[in-house]
Amino acid sequence: MSSRPFSKISGVLNGPIAVVGLLAVAALTVPDIAEQTAFDLKVLLVAIWAVYILQLIETLILHEAADGSDRLPALTVDVLSVLVPLIAFLFVGRRDQSLYCAIWLLKPLRNSTFFRLLGRVVSNEARNLIGVTSIFGIVLFGAALAAYLAERDVQPDRFGSIPQAMWWAVVTLSTTGYGDEIPISFAGRVIAGLVMMSGIGIFALWAGILATGFYEEVRRQDFVRNWQLVAAVPLFQRLGSAALVEIVRALRPRVVPAGTIICRKGDSGDQMYFIVEGHVSVATPNPVDLGAGNFFGEMALISGDPRSATVSAVTEVSLLSLYSADFQMLSSSNPDIADIIRKTALERQAAKPKA
Ligand code: CMP
Image 1: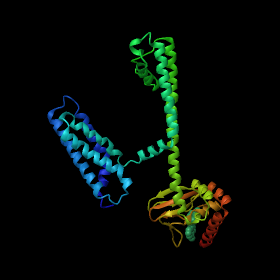
Image 2: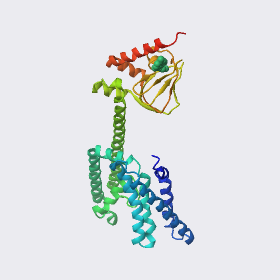
Image 3: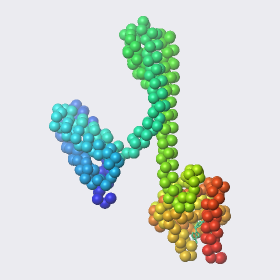
Image 4: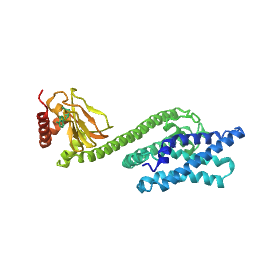
């Protein structure tokens, strides 16, 4: 990690540097910009380009450890960010040279996982999206045809053909309504009203499909991640897959930094914790260190008494927490595991010095 100092800096600065570059590109298109200002802006673009060369070199040389497929989007963006302005400088007239730096629009996206997520959502929902797009096409053509029939005699210059009426149909169906073409016949206005309402419905359908797709994909990712965490806890390794699914849904992952107090002596406790990674310290008279695979916080959960000790994170700790209602569910569906937890709670209770 320490061998990648530039990537840490450029990773954070990718967005701001690209924004500065794009503002310079935009400013250079102003016709009456002062010559000195234009020169300064071009120097700025060259400086940004130099930074991007360094980033490309670093991606090529220092990231060899990274997986090839993970590296591909960043590498593609880095190569384009350097090559496109270079080719423009060599082969394009001076007037448009700086415009090609607009390729830097891609820079802030080079490390983004959003597009991978979007790709999965679109491919999962492809059938539904194609269905709604087909409806859009049908309504669009139908609206253009109807408007052509209703308006061709009264406004032949605007609705004189189906392709001409198509522009009106797109503007109306998308509810944009530029107002450059307006039906004036009664039938034309009725058609316009219907098209507008269909447009709202179609866009709502698209939005709904995508929103559901995103929600399901994020839930799926969470489930897979939680499954891996749960599978790392030895206590759950004896469970069958049906019981594992149940427990994966019930457990909530949480990462706490070193030094955090996870539960405090005397507080009430409505959840217990399983340690996936890291260490915690239980502040009993002889402090106890618990590591991966152990659990704590079960005593208050089972007895309803206040927390018997303060537990704090010695290192960064990855935890899975189980709430009391879910513990009851676990107890009825997996009595073996609940018995182990109860037995441990009794042993710990017995180890407590008598007051
Ligand atoms: P609880 O009382 O809910 O909160 C503090 C937790 O510390 C307690 O549950 C146990 O899980 C844990 N704990 C208490 N005493 C011991 C012990 N002697 N050894 C290991 N863990 C303990």
